[in-house]
Structures are given as structure tokens and as C-alpha cells.
Image 1: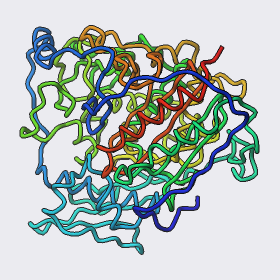
Image 2: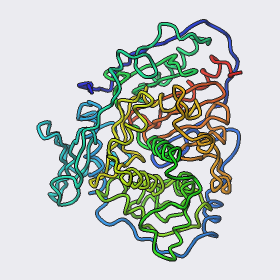
Image 3: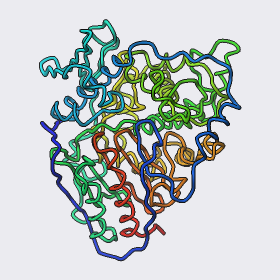
Image 4: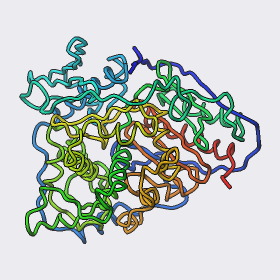
Amino acid sequence: MNRPARIALAATTVTLVASALVSCGGGGGGGGGALVGAGQVAPAATTAELPAREALIARARSLEIDTPYVPPPGDPLEHNTAGYAKTVCSNVFITGMSPDVAAEATGYFTGPYAQRSKVGTPVVDRTNKEVRITMVNGKTLTARYYGSQGCVTLAAGATDVSFKPESVTSALPDPSTQSWPMGDVLPADSGLTFNSAIVGQAVAAPFEQPGAYTTAFVVTHKGRIIGERYMSGVTPTTPLESWSMGKSVTATLMGILIRQGVYTLDQQAPIPEWQTAGDKRQQIRISDLLQMSSGLRIKAPDDPDFDPNGTYPDHIYFYTGRIDAFNYAATRPQQWPPGAVGRYRNTDPVLVNYLIRLAVEKRGEDYLSFPQRALFDKIGVRSMTIEPDPYGNFLTQGHDFMSARDWARLANLYLQDGVWNGERILPEGFVKFVSSVAPAWAADKRPIYGGFFWLNGMGQWPVPASAYYMLGAGGQFVIIIPSHDLVVVRLGYDKGESLSTAGVQKALSLLMQAIAPSQ
């Protein structure tokens, strides 16, 4: 795969694919920023109000199980430095970003910007394909590039990872020779009817504020690309950091296994660590995990009672602890009964990934190539890199790099009810499941989360309430709008996250004007 040599904080290029001009109605509200997920910013609700923080805390306490909380071990600054090293490594060796931009503008979620001044400057070793950062105490953290597995920060005292890296290649032909969506050749005319002038304004909107640092913006209508724009140095095939949008990939891989008859949604999750007689975690269903309502006890920045000055959050430790993430998640105690309280916590997608690995390896198949084989090759995706922990466990809950066009492909799989080119990839009803409010979240009067997808249930985006979306730290965003057969993708640097929402809001409002609802 060709990587761009350098990506700078620079200008943009634009492409607009359009057909006839028509006048369409539509529109919606606006809004400022409100924290909805760890490291993720979305606009505040405009048509309804979320319950008060105190009410969320009180309801959760009334259901709480008396189990101890054991915080993640180790030095928080060391964890932050591990995340910093991994981010720089990934953006340099996967995306092709210059080291100074990678250090200045990306990866704040696991390597906070404020903490970077407390450690040495990242040393990029292109010969050994690694990034090293030395702390004041003399300890050096090393993140190494492993090709198809991206970058991994080595475990404490280790000189290599504890799994055998595999070269994963796509079985698809050269995308430059294939028509969209299986390739990247676009038709001269989309054959669709919409207001191309307004679509052009919508595509430009996320780039109007330079400080938003938007890297890519893609719009598809009825499966066709009708507009796209990129930061200078970024191309339609450039893999970009996508963070928690990878949770929706996790849902998709589980959906494939359900379609194959390996698992069912209502099945109790067969986590090996829970199989001791009397372990109440055996009651956690796969659907509870997918709906972020397992009830497992950790601390996460999205918790209503989270103390930013308290212990290092487990939610982030899954990325930075350099541990067996699957085992760590599986050994957390129960805080609430399953399906009772909805909380955005990485335990749940990590455990779904655990189940995926167990199923794939039980069949004697290669785990590291499973996503490409079972999903990406089927829908034309060639750019995805999913990074594992040092033990070879995919951290699909956030360590993922994929191009904007490939995110659009995945979203269109959902827009098409899990069917691609006539082949059913996801089981019937699965798209409805992930795009419907999770019961535990509804019980908290927060109709904003489904099955590893966020919902527009509070009208936080100026599009119909039926829309649902993927969301990642740093302003990564893919929204699916079934009423208009629309998919909208926005990617960008962490540095511009606080300014990104306004541009996306404007773009969505314009698209509602440019494109009529589907009949």
C-alpha cells in the first residue's frame, strides 16, 4: 500500500461529483459542544434534554453491586508516554505523517498534549521502524511498527511483541482499475438528482475554519460519492486515525459471526474467565456487551461521576497499559446487573473482540487476517490497519486507521441493511439492533446509544432522529442517514476537535437542503 510521504497542517483539495440541479427542502437546528464519549465531542441536544448528572449517579447507585474497585497499576505518566509513542509511530508509519505534526496535532486521547512536555521528544528510527520516548527517570518507551499490525508499544521489559506478526494483504484487484464502490474509479456523472451547488457548500464547510484541521470529508448518496475533499497530502486512500469508530467495526465482525451461526445476540457471553460455578458474570449476554451495558466495574471519562483528578482510568489503560487487554477486561468485577445501566466503557468492545478471537481460532482460522477476509475484501476496503496489544489481541475499540472512502463503504453496508452486491453479510435485523436505543440507556432517559453506534435520539445533529453514527476521539465522525440514503464522513486531527463540530453541523444542514428525502 502506498503511503503519502508527508502530511502537513496545510491547504485542501476538493472534488465534487454532481448531476442535475434541483431545489430541495430540509434543514435543522444547531448547537454547541457537549462531551458524549471519552475523548469525543458532539453537539448538545436541541430538541430534548439529557437527565441531570446527579440523577444518573443516583439511579446507578441504587442498582450497584458491592464489589471492590482495583485501579490500574503503574505510573500514569508512563501510560501517557506509551500512548504518545504509539500515536506518533502509527501516524508516521501508517499514515505517512511528518513526526512533528504527529507529535503536535494527533493522539491526545491516549497521550494528552499537556503531558507531552514532561517527557523527551519522540525519536523516530526509520531503520528499525520504531519510535522511542525517554522519560525523566531514564525509562524509554518503544513503539514499533509491525506492518499489517501497525504499531505496538512494547510491554515493560520486553524487546519484542508476544505474538507472531502476520502479513495481511487484500485479495482485491487494484482499486484504480475497479469502479466504485469495489474500487476507486468514479463515474463522470453520478446519475442522481440533487442540488450540486449546495452539496459543494456542504463539502467546503468542514474546511472553512483552518483550526478545525479537517483531513477528509466524503459524502455518498444512494451509495455514490457525490462530494469529497481532503487536506493537502491526504488522498482518498490515506489511512487516518479513527479511534472509537472502530467499535462499529467490532460490531460488524460480531454480526458476521452471528450470521454464520457461531453466536446469537441473546446468548450468554462465553468468556473463559467467567466459567467458574456461581460467577454472576455468566449472565452477561452478547447483546449487553454490544449495547455498552455489561455492568462491569471500571472507571471511564464518560462516567457521570468520573473524577479527572482521580486514578488513571481503565478505559484508557486498555490502550496504554501494554497488557493482555482481553484478560484485563475479563477479570473486572460486576458493578451492576447486566442490561441495567448503560455506560460508555471499553470493557465491552474489548470483550466482544475477545469472543471474536475465540471463535476464529476455534475454527482453526488465522485471527489477524480475519477482518480482511471476512469483511473488508467483501466491501472493497483495502486501507484498514487494526492494531493489537503486545499479545496480538485486536484493540478494535480504537486503535484503527482507515481512509475516509473506506469508512463510507462500511457505512453503506449498514445503509443497505447489511447486504452488499446481493450478498447478505450481516444477519437480518442486525442493522435495526445496532441503530435502536439500548434498553439500559433508555432506562437512564438517554436515547443516544445503540449497539456500538451512537444515535441521534436527542436531535443533537440537524438531521432526522433515525440517523445513527460512528464517533471517535479527535472529531472522527461517520453518520448514516437512512431517510435520505446519505452517508457523511469527517476525519481530522485532535488539535482541531473543539472547532470541528460547527463545520459538520453546517455541512449536515446544507445536505438536508440539497437532497430530498427518499421515497
